[in-house]
Length: 77
Image 1 (spheres, rainbow, N blue to C red):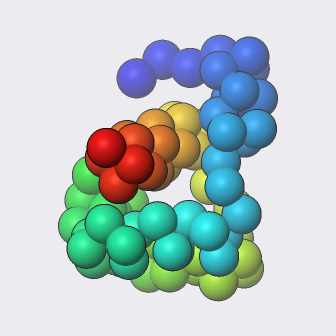
Image 2 (spheres, rainbow, N blue to C red; image 1 turned 60 degrees about the horizontal axis):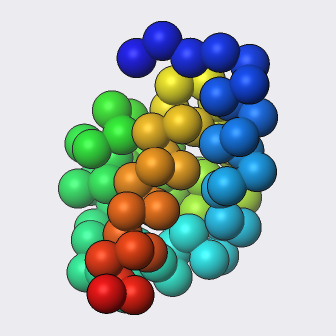
């Protein structure tokens, strides 16, 4: 996935706080492993994002934000 600086800034603004990201994932019944596969990272990476010890960057940031937004939409439906 090609990404631009503008896309990355938009994704960063759309990304929920780590605790909210975890709450969305858990509410949707999705494991860290499953989310990691969807985003293209390891389970440990997702755990670090949720613990706020690391932050997603580049294409992973965009994909993570998009997946979380889709899960949140599904939960609201």
